Length: 308
Image 1: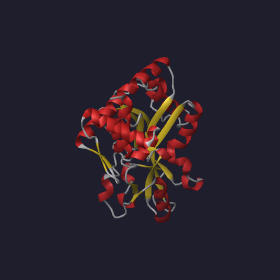
Image 2: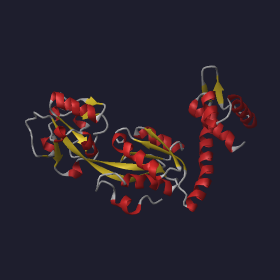
Image 3: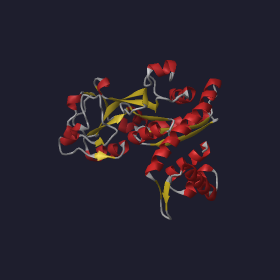
Image 4: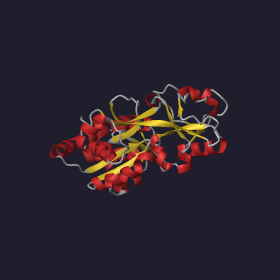
């Protein structure tokens, strides 16, 4: 049994297709099939059930694949330890960013990251938090950026920044208050997004408010919500980093919420507890510091970066 054979079965499990797995491994499909058969004969167990239409792990195969993933991860840690000790920042880095964060962070992040770390092969995928955590546990990701407060065994959370929410009103809204308090936000006039505006630490819960009033809708994006408000009246809440996306006229419809600590979302970096590539993680924090609005990043991150 070799480490390369273990990588082959992990690839087969990931793609559930011999041709795609072989291509990802950089070998021919017959070679991949032969290596699988050889490993099955050595272990005297069938790892995959295969037919013309599907490739699926057996019950024993599922256990072998999970162990193979752990073995591969541990083997890769050896190279990572050497690289970290040398202070090298290079190689592959697989990052996930939540879909409600990506529009505000990724455009500038990608540009600055490529400029600052051309020797790193960066791969970014948008994932919801639960999928991201599962991929981290399996070792398919190095790190993830998502809303704070998501916990999972074996996963470490590092707070990155805190973003305020603001009220966006229709132009003809009769309640043109200079500043809003939570009690001013009438649920029947509110338009919400399914996930982005679930404020865990807020005095007013937009998630719980779905049962109130008769005009609470769930849209797919902040931009859609703004258009709904412009067309139908009422209000919504928008993250601070959406302000640059507004026209000058739309910015006149934005109001602050009194007690900013009550209306904000925290964003964190998620990694496995046994992750060791501290220098690589700090390529994320250093890149964010190049363009994030002043005062938004965690003070600890600004001073010390990520310490493992």
